[in-house]
Image 1 (cartoon, rainbow, N blue to C red):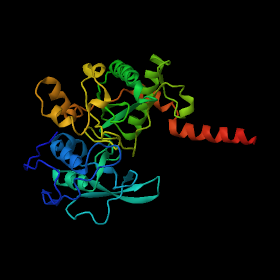
Image 2 (cartoon, rainbow, N blue to C red):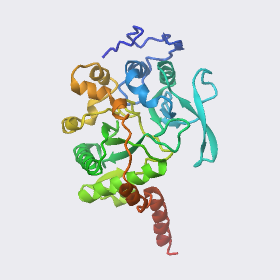
Image 3 (cartoon, rainbow, N blue to C red):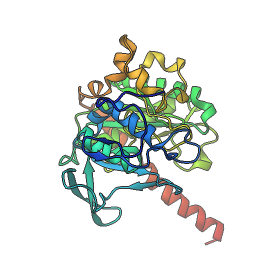
Image 4 (tube, one colour):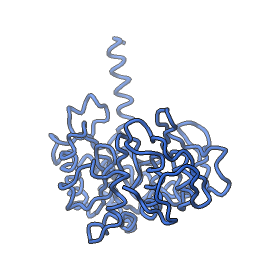
Amino acid sequence: MVLAPRNGYTGAMTGAEREGIALTHLTEPLFDGAAATKGDLVDYLDAASDAILPGLRGRPLSVIRVRSGQQPFMQKNLPGYAPPWLRSVTLWAESSRREIRYALCDDRRSLLWFGNQRAVEYHPTLFPAGQADRPTYLVLDIDPPSAGDFGHAVAAALLVRQVLADAGLHGAVKTSGAKGLHVFVPVDASSEEAAAATRAIAARAERLDPALITTAFIRSDRGGKIFLDSTRAFGATVAAAYSPRARPGVPVSFPVPWDDLDRIAAADFTVHTVPGLLSGSGSCAGQMRDWSGQMRERQPLSPDLVAEGRAIPVARVQAMHEGKRRARARRGT
């Protein structure tokens, strides 16, 4: 597929320029197994910029880059060679006990600069810059044990939707771009309230079908079930809607109408196929393009949902303590 970016560029030629960004090495393979070049990535980001930017704008951004011949790596700190016009925000990272200068990818020019840096994945925070205690959504990450279990991931997502409806909430769903799904729920809440509600929603979904869903954070405890990850909270990030993923074929995390979930496969959405879907007509295509619109109606969380979540241990912390207990048991201490 040859895309048609807005400046008329129609091929991955070395030495091309867009928005003042000198694009280089566009004919190089993006990475082993990508079935795409760096130029394909840049073309995709350009063609999908109107869709992807609303989810990035004004949010501290981490990216996953893939340098030629190297393994993918996550970049949080904006490098010193970044252009002076690229906006950024400095935040304290409690986990690493240091300040990190995060980029703010607010416009097409910034997105193209990241694409030229071989930034494949785009992971914004749940909150806008300057509002760390006011996330705009909570996230349920539905992670099947293998790509072949996508149908089970869909069944789990529909149970999450049922839990949300029972709690007077609505959410939107997208493929993760890996093997699972993400359910986003726009909320008007503090970070602590959103984190507690996420745990409660996951626990309620697990109770609906414990043979299908588990909230066990330790992988060996999952028994081949769909893992419902409730730990995306506070400073966590998540792959943005329409973000490519650094995986074979360069799949894209793509919004899907709830009613179409059982008619799609995660492999349907790649940097080669998504531009055509975004430019299509009809109500389905409109819903696919309007992910940011589905996030605008921020909803209050019921006190009982938050209270239930506060009584549930944080999965990562619980898993850490359990791991230490098992290690002591193995040592016989």
